[in-house]
Length: 478
Image (cartoon, rainbow, N blue to C red; front, side, top):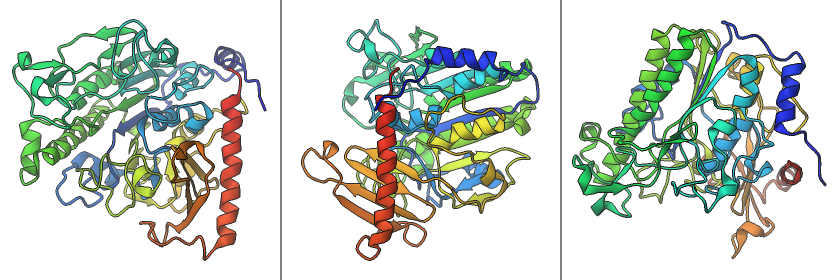
């Protein structure tokens, strides 16, 4: 089945000519969407980490809303990032995994939807939704070998950016010590002659930033983001800032100062925890600057991670007691830190058990500016405005997941997890389903599939209907 959807250009023209365009004016809310990379559910102070210091994130938890069940749309980075910008599951447009596919021209991003309303839009940090150059080798896929995957921020609605295609070291992002090839961490080098180029550049509106860029990568990103925010606040222009840190994705590198509180741990873990502390400091810096600029009360600030922690159980990242890690659709791979602060709209100290997702950002923002989605294509997220007002609110729409031979469906209480564990699992039908009561059993230790077959069957049907909808979206003509 194929459904024709108007081109993105036509849709945006319709927005302009249909009376939906509001004049640029003060009083519109601002939006800042922060995301870390591979930060586990347990990798914050407010979640009870025994050593990690995250005072800025702890302050967000105390001054805004803490989501006890916040989900990345996928257990790896690229699909989750697409979900933030579109409100749609990445299986609707072919970003199935990291370094797979790209953000398609037909998809409408939140930046494209806000620009006609007078918003300035900026992206800062890791992009990972397509390549940023067709001309020179760059990062994972950039350059003349993959021109079809060219899909940078500046053709997807962002009129300002400071972006990389994919990962960089979390300190001295352009450098890899010559002795550190293949390593997951290293100590910073003072002498650049002892290092080689890492291979991932920052790009600004099609122009490569050749460097040198030295020091904490999270600070480098935030420097550019704050320049953007300051310009908009001073001109009384409403803004959307998408700030996606590289920390704590491998390779993790932290300064001596940020490693010092974690000296009792291995060097690997010192760098991991240290780069999270460095990132946390930039979150605090952002909020301080919003206050100084006089726009904090008018700004929704959200924070989450793109998926669970990297590596095996012996790796530094923590999913607390949750089952699974990055690449898994068990809770440890997709349940991530989730916070939202909006003075006057979200009461301080709010906490909710309602499942929420990166898919919900776009519908929430559109509801906040009182603008409907411009066409009838499926959107998988919901507005979170009701839960901001009432933390006891229930979700009226399930959350579907697909990734590398795994599926899941999550409701207010129950979750099904399905997989085909055999060879070539990603392309085979799902035959092995499990059922968990997440309210009673968040660690997914007791499979209820045999005990509650009717409940399982009902949720399998919901999952398959959603999968069929995703398949139709994927087949839709550009």
